[in-house]
Length: 273
Image (cartoon, rainbow, N blue to C red; front, side, top):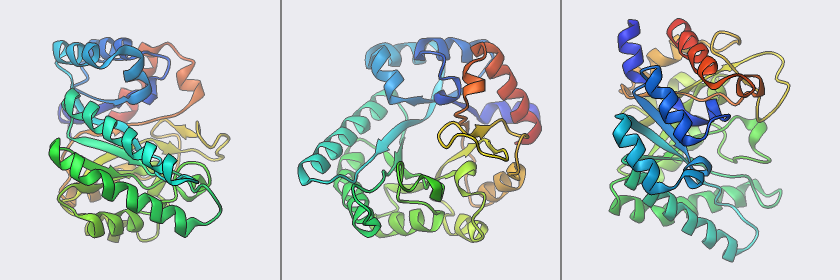
């Protein structure tokens, strides 16, 4: 892809510029001719739904996704119901903002029983599918690296995500391929092919050795070991031609001036994605 085509697909996942509020991220994206953004709910709630919708529209920015729903597992039925209700609110927010994808970070277990936790995830997604359907939205299951199983998600491989999507119903449930989380998987190519026509997002960053912070351990593309161009081509061969989100949690990047951070991200994107 040439640089022009690349920028037409570039999406700033807002967590990459965590130092910015949503209004700043929108204005910063406009300055650097970014066409797409993925909004995080904590930033959305700080700014306000109506304000964000108006500002995004005025700026001409399109939304690749809203992040995040999920976190379904809990120790009590009452808490699981509350989390389902929060996911319904996320669906309303996503539809109002104009994106058709809600990313699901499915959540860790409430106990050490992983099978129980995965059952809670399945039940939670099943519960919100009719609501997503009513709002014209698709739910993107994002598997997270196994090292996140204890505190972020018990869905840890693309195979698990494909299994869930196929079981619950591919009309309204798909998968999100995040390079940081799935690059290591020996069955990745097979599972990307299996997800043909049902990939709802592609996220990029890099895996720098050593990982020094589990949550903020992602690095700029080109600083690590992931073959991002090869993965992009596989995702495209499976039918995904949509926006490519750069999603980097990294304190060094967050400590930079936001404009400089975004410029560096765009430069690495051109070179390594």
